[in-house]
Length: 375
Image (cartoon, rainbow, N blue to C red):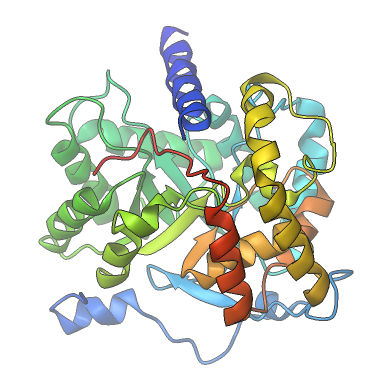
C-alpha cells in the first residue's frame, strides 16, 4: 500500500510540474530483423472507417521494431486511473467497445503502463485482447521507482505485467522514465536487454529520454545486438522542445521511432475548451484556466484547416504529429473519440498548412515542459 501511494505521488508531482511550468546496425542480419517489408497489407489496415469524411480508408501502416503498426496508437492511461481521469469500473464495457472500434478502424497499437491505475490498465488491455480475434500491438512500461534496484527488478516487473495482461510475450517493453537514483540507469538497461534475450518481449524502447540518454542506451543495446526501437516523449503543437533540443533529429539518425504522448495537450487542442466546455476537474482544470485563453488563435487555425479538409481540429493536430515523423498516441475513453482518432489516418496536411500551424503555434508562447525527461 505504501508503494502504491508513492507511485501515485510520483505521477501526481510529474503531472503537476508538467502543467504548471511547462545507424543502421553494422551487421546485415540485424538490419533484416529490424525492418520487414511485407508483401501485402493486412486486412485490418484496409478497413473502411465509417462516418469519418471522404478520406476514410486507413492505409497508413508503419513499423516499430519490424512489427507493423498503425501510424497512430491509443494511450490507455485513462483506462483504470481514477485520480486524473475519473475511471469507474462501470465503464469497462464501454472501454472494451472502444478497444474493438480501434481495431476495426485499423488502429492496432495500445500503450499502457504498470502504474496506470496501479496495473488496472494492463488488466483491462489483456482482457480486451483475449476477447477479440484481431491481432494487436501491446506496449507497456517499467516504472523506475526508487526502491527498485538492479537489472532483476526490470525482469520481475516485466513478468508481472505479462501476467496481468495474460501474455507470454509482449510486442514492446519500455522504461517509463530515466532512473531516479544515480547509477541505476545502466542496471535497468541490462534488465531491458535480459527481457529481450529471454523472449519476454519482441522489442524494447524507452520513454522520456533526451538526445544524450537515448544515444547512450542505443549504443549499449547495440553492443548486445539488440535494437532500441522507440522513445516515447511528450510532443504536440504546444510542446515542441523535442525539435530544439535535438531529440527528433537524434532519434531519426538512430532509426528510433518517436511515440508522441499528449499529442492533444490533454485535450486543449480539440478546441472544445475554447468554446466554453466545462473544464476538467482536478489539477488539469486548474492549469487549463491559464492555458486555454492563450490558445484561441491556434485553435482557430486548427478549425480553419479542419473545415477545409472535412476533419476536426483534433484530427488536424494528430495529423500534424504524424507529419513530423512521429506516431501520436492520444487517449480514447469513448467510441466517438476512437472514431475521431482514426480520422487522423490516411491523409496528410499540405506544406502550406504545416507552415501555418508552425507559425501560429509559436504565438501562444506555450511550450509545455518535460519534468521527467533527461538530457
